[in-house]
Length: 278
Image (cartoon, rainbow, N blue to C red; front, top):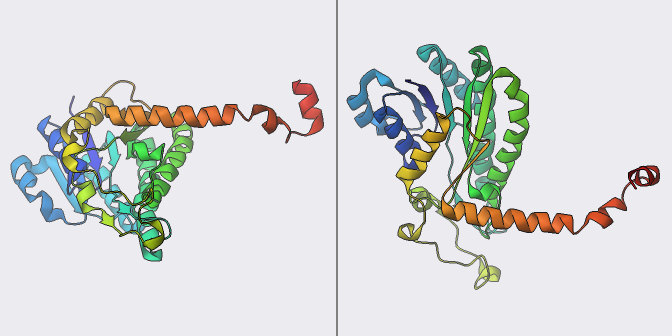
């Protein structure tokens, strides 16, 4: 069955790969990006099955306009993929105020506003799937990547709450949590040299070469499509053996730390609650 997709951040990396694979399978795509001409080759190949609009997700008014246009043009959109975002490698102290504001505006606020814009349309059409590009970095953290983790941990919390709110309307949500994928993401990321106090420490590490990363861009995107068209898309989609290994390890450590505090946690209960619970 042919589907219609809405994809942000379609210029390169997994966004571009997703648009290509979805079109190749015969579906229609509403693709958005800051420079629409970057998809001219696909527009020439696929004609009116590819609908393209300029969009910077930090422009909330424009987000709402483009979303409205896409739903009107397609009648129904089955899968929304919120993919726009980028990375900054820097210690928390070395970040600039502008870097903090811009990344949160793009990766976090932009994703939230896109979700808010599409939910009324998905509800009106009786449902659909809203997917959000997260990362294994939404469940664990690395030195020099704190700002990226802010956005991914933040959007994961937002989607956990949103999922329960919209489920009664037939709207499903999926957080996509890949590992280290061989894309241009890492080459395009801003890298701030560590300042003197951090040199030689945990934050002062050479970047991993793309060719040493575990996950294939093509196979990761194929996994996203496979989940999106399945009868029961998962709330969280883990892709890459590195993501599974590191996430399960981090979650086990976190759970063990919480479980070890059971008795001490109970000391904060009001007295009559503790008596009843005992």
